Length: 88
Image (tube, rainbow, N blue to C red; front, side):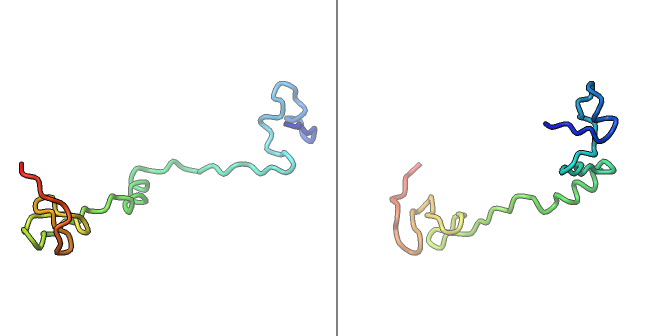
């Protein structure tokens, strides 16, 4: 880090220019003025919930299954037997 001698804080060898905000070519960082409250934070994050799992009935046997997947009970998908059903 190059230390400029533009101000009194930069010229102080104890600080090594660390506390100086007047460095050429560097802008000070953005710092929030107030702490974000729980209410505001939660209101901002309301749309980040996980989507609900879609379940539909199997047209062959009528049990509940996820769409676009082979039925675990009868082994049918799109009207064709894809997997042999296992008996419990």
